[in-house]
Length: 253
Image (cartoon, rainbow, N blue to C red; front, top):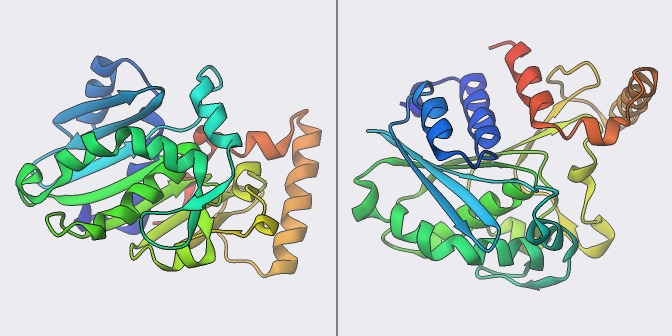
């Protein structure tokens, strides 16, 4: 039961599920999530928008898939940053909303009270998948036959909507940010976009830290310099789901 896990265990579990969601091999996915305690798997796939449903006797997790460079629909969604009217209030990223709209009827059918038989409902995702999971979780409270979302866990999430939208979400959101992860800085705040949820920051050494603004600036420069010495661009390397998982595994419980 996920509710019996501590924060580190939950964060690591959802990071692994968000990573597994990148696989197209459903049989391999079943083997992987069975080790994590899930017995039921369903793959949602429509016009390039993709997500998984993982379920056991007590919990139901929707894990949304992030950007895949080979999927034109994913790239188009990332770039389509026009703010449009959301289902709740204010405005949301048009491309992210369009991805969710493709899958929502199928997901909605599986998460209502009759279908999930009282299981605890969770959402997670990385990158584009993080944005999709945020929008899906935000829609759940609009339906009387969907139990409240327990929590939302995202990794390397872009900004999803305007301030009014973020304030309306009504879901506990743990948003992980790895040092210089470039995706967490788009779309630009100058366009009106804001982040939602409680930020959990991983510093240049991969450690979970709460830093002041000045400490954050210094840490980002430190991360950039460490990346240069290793011959890599830190902004992109820090977005890797592998990096997020490795850092969470080292985190103190």
